[in-house]
Amino acid sequence: MGSELVEIKMSQSTLKIGDKEVQNTVSLTPSPILDSIPKTPKSPFGARIMTPLASPMKKALTYMEEIGHFTKLDPQDAWLPITESRNGNAYYAAFHTLSSGIGVQALVLPLAFITLGWIWGIISLSLIFMWQLYTLWLLIQLHESVPGMRYSRYLRLSMAAFGEKLGKILALFPTMYLSGGTCVTLIMIGGGTIKIFFQTISGSNHCHLIPPSTIEWYIVFTVSAIVLAQLPNLNSIAGISLVGSISAVTYCTLTWVVSVVKEKPEGVSFEPVENKSDLGRVCSILNAIGMIAFAFRGHNLVLEIQGTMPSSLKNPSHVPMWKGVKFSYSIIALCLFPLAIGGYWAYGNLMPNGGILSALDKYHGKDTSKVILGITSLLVVVHSLTSFQIYAMPVFDNLEFRYTSNKKKPCPWWLRTGFRVFFGCLAFFISVALPFLPSLAGLIGGIALPVTLAYPCLMWIMIKKPKTYTSSWFVNWSLGLLGLVLSVLLVFGAIRTIATQGIDVHFFKPQ
Image (cartoon, rainbow, N blue to C red; front, side, top):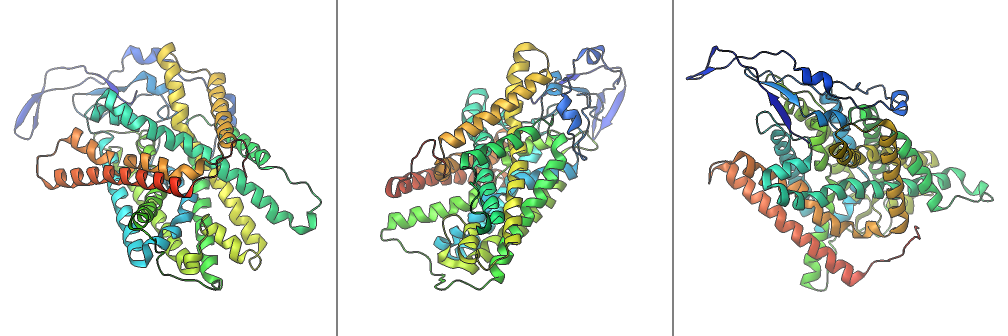
């Protein structure tokens, strides 16, 4: 999975490439094998719910316009949700990247400034933004780093760089957590926000109504997410990602604009919070840096998004992918920087632990239009639903990979539907059973941090093998090792914070 099979038919001719002469021509006659590759059965749900921007599923066949090669994708790729459609483009890449790269975790960015202050807060936010954008570029270049192969999954690239066993150990848990764990968190956030939305629009005039419980709102969100999850592949949810992108940008902008326009609460201070001990101060700084790093997510989906694109020697996939990423991260920067700076300016050290959205409700809930508060909550719900789709896709892909590897045939539509219903129910169960899971976000975020900041640099060295002591060698070794050290420090800081402050552990009792 994630690689390509190469079939070459040669006839004698001479090509001159540089100073070398190569005997190499090709017959692009399709192989009879192609006609025998079974196609993934179409789901009746996917056929009816296809979004306007969805691409139809095509044959898993691509022609690399490279003289001497006739490249055919691994037939198994034609059966899997990520790679069964190869008709993506820069627009799709921008939609997916923006929807997955911005989220409610950005709303807690002003909390980092409470510890770091104005100067170090802005410096840290800028440096981490540039760092993760650089590692994003590395992943896009590594997608086709080996001729005749495409690494369309983060795990496959890790195994190619570090070896099958070590690569799986290093990348399997972080990538699966970033996919499955994010979906669980989205159920909690989406379900909880639906509850807030209901309370906002119902008001005191309908207090006689018995509102649904938190678990019931979780069920509403999960059922909606499972229905949307019946869209067959990553390309087919491009329209969903577009809606999610617009929702995320809108609620982020609404939140910080309303906070800045409203009058500041009394007692706002911008003095950094001081700790009694040096160790406590260090842990607070690490926790703040972790909040900033955790705000930039989605690296575990970059190769998958690029894998939906056609590629050839004249038109390699990294060109439209990078165009889409540049556009989406320009928008992300225009959202995150004003959100962090404006939120801290509006509330300072009075910022509650829930972030700027909680601050808006706490300090301006009574003097802000219910329409604005209701729209903001609704947009959060919509974005959570759309983000669920793109983060769940690698899980769906992995489940179907296990089946197709054993059976040597594509999943029937009813089994594909069953996999997605099963995952949605499992995520719902975890969200209800472990409602304190967000309290461990700092700890697990530190474990998953190398996926974004460290592994891409080390994979570049292992695969590209730059000359020793060159700028590329030095920069990537430095950033890779620094990312690993930062991950260890963040885990240590999170463990100490949990040990000193504790967490409210309650099973099957979501608030």
